[in-house]
Image (cartoon, rainbow, N blue to C red; front, side, top):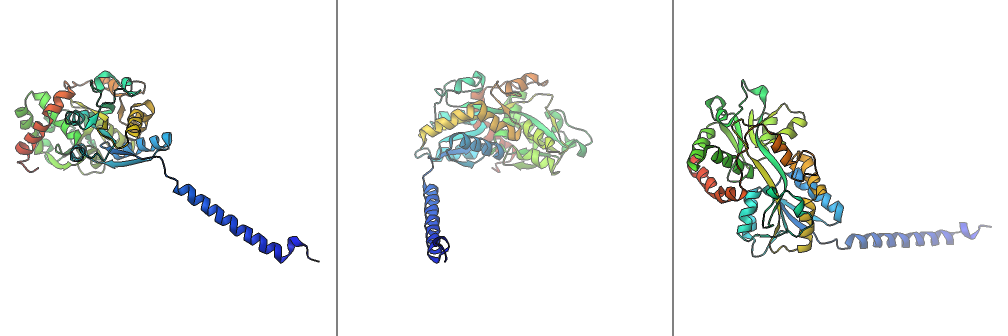
Length: 347
């Protein structure tokens, strides 16, 4: 006689129970999937893509909160923030030179964040005295050179503008790139006048084969053989060399400058609490480490090795006198004059 356990009734019962359990499991998984995640924080990032993604991922792991990320070059980002000022679409602006943040603060586009726990951990020279922005990484302007493509490596800005390097240079576009704005500011500071800076930039323009939208691109293009010289921040050239490309980083002997890459909270941020949490994380040691490591950028925190202050102290070339406020005030003038005097109004 067949037992109940082996009967067709048990088999039917088992099938029905299995179906019910499967339905319950599907319903449970669906319910979990449909649970709303904690509100996203919206970040406009003007740093390189690897660093933007790394900070966002680290913040998501730390908080469980989603980060919606859009990357735009500095000038485009400032334009977009201005256009949406009456109805802000972003919570945070991350990356790009501090001069642009000074401009944004003057236009009422940023909210003060000097009450956040990590704000005071940033060296005073690398943050806003009124609390509207703080530096979270830096880079020193340099030449990225594929020395195997040249008879002689340029070691100064004056050498770079000589006819020896005609058609050999890739540079970022000053209208679009914060890196290029630093480049033009260095020439202004080095020669002492706007007119003198434009005279130099006209000479340099004869040697430039390509202007890029991004300050990171010249190093990558030099590494791939598009031209032997690129004007960029040193960490991007160092990154290509670490990846195995035959490039060297040259700090011009007649002086260079540096970038303070900043973070700020957008005025009227849709998610104020999330904005403050993200800004504070980006200033923290963990946040700066996440942002600097993927591209070898220099953190501003003096608790981290290889920070911007230490790198500047170790440099054996002149550092152009830097005033973030002064650079911000002259930025628009320098960009206008470059477009008009150097590129004949092409931009």
